[in-house]
Length: 529
Image (tube, rainbow, N blue to C red; front, side, top):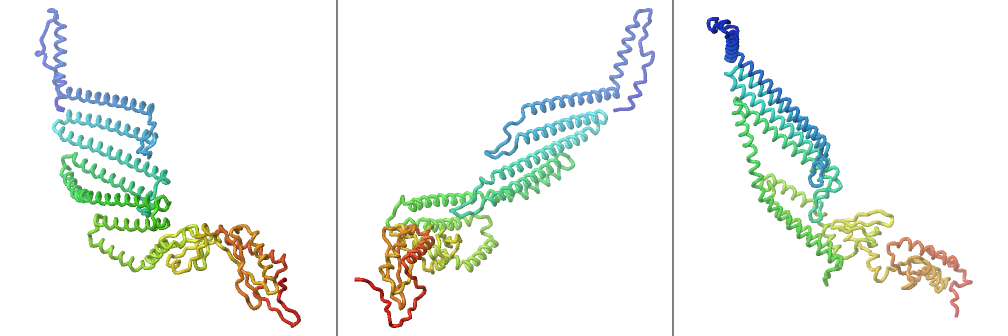
C-alpha cells in the first residue's frame, strides 16, 4: 500500500478543472452529479482506498466462512448425538471399541476438523492481508503459511492416528483379558509348547510392542513430511528420508527373502500334525478294541503312539532347523553344541527311565487302576508315563516311583487277573495240638462265610502249612473280586476269626505255646471213632 496516496484524498481538483455551469443556465444539478462522479472515480483510483476496501471484504468473507463452518459442524454434532453408534466396532468376536468410545472419538474428530477449518480461514485472511499490504513478500508469506498449514494438518492427523491406535490397543488388551479362559495352550503332538497364560502375556506384549513401533513410524513420517513443507528444510527431509530407507530396506528385504523358507517350514509342520492326528486315531481305535491285530495287544497302543509321536516331533525339528533364522551362524552352532553336551551328560538317568517305561508298557505288568505292590509300596496305579509310575496308597498318599526302580523290583498285581479267576486272599493262624483240626477248619470257614467282599463261589478252603514243635499253622484262603478293598476285607476277616475262635473256645497261639509235661496226661486230642 502506498501511504503517499493518502494525501491525494485531500488534493481536490482545481476550480478551473470543474466545469462551470451557471445556475441561470439550469445545469446546476448536472454539474453536482458530475462532480460527485469525479470524486468517486478519484477515490476508486486511489490505491489506499482500494486496498482498504479489499481488506474489509477479506475480513467480511472470513467472518462469513467462519460462521458457515460453525453452523455446519454444529449440525454434524447434533446429527451425531441423535444417531449414535449402536453396535460398536468389532473384529470377529472381539469388541475393539464400545459405542461410547466411538462417539467420543467422532466428537474429537469433529473438533479437530473444526479447528483445522478455522486455522485455514485465518491463514487465508493473513495471506490476503499480506497480499494487499506488502505485495513484494506475498509469495514468501504464502509459502510459509502453506507449510504451517500443512504441518498443522500433519500434526493433527498424527495425534488422531496415535490416539486411535492407543484406543485400539487398549481394546484388544481388554478383549484378551475377557477371553483368557478361551485361550488354549499351544500343543504339538501332545507336548505343551506354550501354556495359555504365557500365550496371553505374549499377545499383550506383542500388541503393545506393535503399537509403539507403529507410533514411531508415524512420528518419523510426520517429521519427514513437515520438513518437506518448507523450502528451506526440504533438503533435510530428503536426507532424513534416505536415512530411513537405508535402515528399513535391509530389514524388509531380509523378511521378504525369509517368507519362502517360512512357508516351507509351515508346510512341514502341517504335514507332521496331520500324521500325528492320523496315528492318534489309528491307535485310539486299537486301544478301544474296534481295530484288532492278532499279536498286538490294545494296552500297547498308547505307548506305541507316544514313541511314534516323539520320533515325528524330533524329525520335524530336524527338518525345519535349517530354515530357522540364524541357524547357520557360528553363535547358533555354539549354542547347539553346548546344549548337546549338557543333554548328553545329564540324560543318562532320563534315558534309562524312558527305556524302563517302554519296557513296562510292553511287559503288560500293570495298567492304570490296578492294585499293585512295588517293593514296600501298595496301592492303585494312577498313571504309567515314560518316566515315572504314580501309585496312590490305601492311605491316600501319591507315591512317584522312577520306572527304572519299578523295573528292578518285584511287582505284585492284585487286579490283573481278578476279573478272570478272582483274587485269593489268605491269612495264617497257629493252633495247639490239643484242638482237633476239624474244629479249626470249621471255625475258619465259618468266619470267612460272614465277611463281606469274600465270594461263596469258589468256596473258601483251609490249608495246613506246617506242623511246628508246639502248634499247627492253618492258612485260610478265600476269593474276592474287590482287590481295591483288600485292607478292609482283611480287617473284617481277622475280626470274624477272633469271634469264631472265642465262641468255640479255641486259643490262638501267638507266637508259640509251650506245655510243661508232668507225665500224667497226654496232649493228644481225642479224635473219636
